[in-house]
Each structure stands twice: as structure tokens, then as C-alpha cells.
Image 1: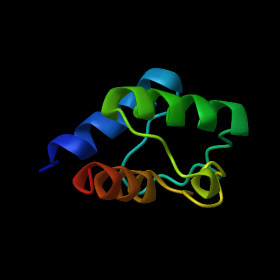
Image 2 (image 1 turned 180 degrees about the vertical axis):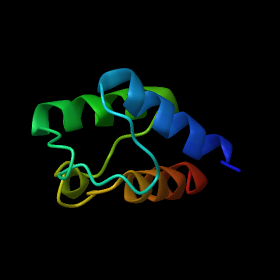
Image 3 (image 1 turned 120 degrees about the horizontal axis):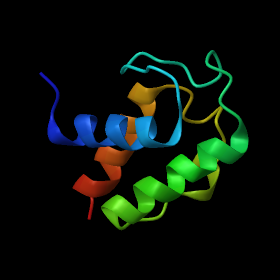
Image 4 (image 1 turned 90 degrees about the horizontal axis):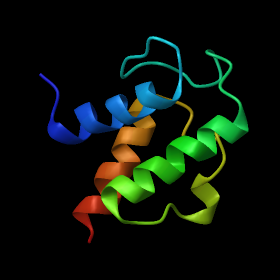
Length: 79
């Protein structure tokens, strides 16, 4: 069963891309471009009211849905 953060992150991503994803989806494997990646980042920043660290603004730093969820969870738990 998904926790609320996992569910919300996946839902946010699905709103912005037209690809079926799950927690194991690799953004590079689905040919996600950097502009769409940043749109996802912005949407998550707005949803959770925090800013991604500059070094996390690269798709290579958060290459999967799982790493994105883990990063968001780490940011919202530290606030």
C-alpha cells in the first residue's frame, strides 16, 4: 500500500506526463526531457512548499520515481 507522499508524488508526475509510471520507473528510460523534469520539480515544490536543492535539479540526481519520492519525504520530514 502506498503512503500518502508516494501517492501524491506519483499523481503529480502523472498529471504532467502521458506515460504510465510506477515507483520503479526510470525517468531516462521513458525519455523524460529536462524541461518536463523541472515542471515536475516545480509542481512538487508548490504542493509541499519547499525548494529542491540546486544539485537535485538534474534528472541524473533523481533518476527514478522512487528516488524522487525519497527525496520529497526527506525534505518534508526535516521541516
